[in-house]
Length: 346
Ligand SMILES: NC(=O)c1ccc[n+]([C@@H]2O[C@H](COP(=O)([O-])OP(=O)(O)OC[C@H]3O[C@@H](n4cnc5c(N)ncnc54)[C@H](O)[C@@H]3O)[C@@H](O)[C@H]2O)c1
Ligand SMILES: [Zn+2]
Ligand SMILES: [Zn+2]
Image (cartoon, rainbow, N blue to C red):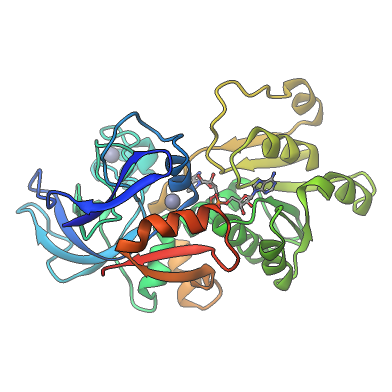
């Protein structure tokens, strides 16, 4: 089969790779019908990946059709249309049964496409371990594109907004308006935000958030403008969706006393100088970490089915898998008109 494989910074190739096969009775093989590129894939593209491996297949957001199942798989069957949440769990431990795959007691931190440990899903086909847990049938009323965005990006955005303690009447900032930040702005409105400040250096992305009613700001101007607009009080809730020291600093500067900062951008910093004294003095809540997608799905399926949430509107391209390397370059360079890039079979 063909797959997108990582060979080093800015070197992802569309190449042949051995077909996936079952490793256990509980696995399934899924034929990809759509997969997408995430900001986390860009960290790999930049060469700041999550392992030193070379030649592995990248990608962790996909939908497809089940084409083979192990004998012990009972809930999904050949022909089912499924979505695969970005990280896998064993499906049997306490945390997995609660949907908290990131606390899985047997498979901790297994995410597709970060190393050779679990091959990625930007491929014609891929293996899903413990398929009864990790291949989720797409419910009626949810399109393939919508399901694709719920495999990671929209789930992370919703998680980030929940972790920011957004309540009816909250004042909110979202820092970073990539697909995830824009979806976090949508989540904030649904959760009842009274005002949302949307911050990004890219004018086109600010304009998208402003169309939905957010107050769009460039990061260089954000702290002063928000201090002035709130007469020094600042904001109840801040979601950081970039992944840099500078944006975590900005988040901590924008939040009010007893407010909450939620960091969902994947952090590269080994020793971030956390301003503990200031955080202590202001009584801040600071949350961070990775989203456990299955935990977010019940709420998200309902909102998508009701037409309240339309994450698919951030998809700007459907391109054949063979154009994947170019799609990485275009998403990374924030080319005009390029947001969520979806790859489909050639
Ligand atoms: N926590 C999780 O579970 C999880 C899951 C998926 C992705 N992520 C992370 O979420 C982040 C966002 O990913 P994405 O898919 O939206 O794409 P992305 O990486 O393209 O989005 C980043 C956005 O931040 C903006 N930005 C850059 N510098 C900025 C600054 N100084 N101030 C404000 N904005 C700035 C960029 O212009 C861009 O729009 C990435 O770090 C990704 O790794 C986290
Ligand atoms: Zn992702
Ligand atoms: Zn588990």
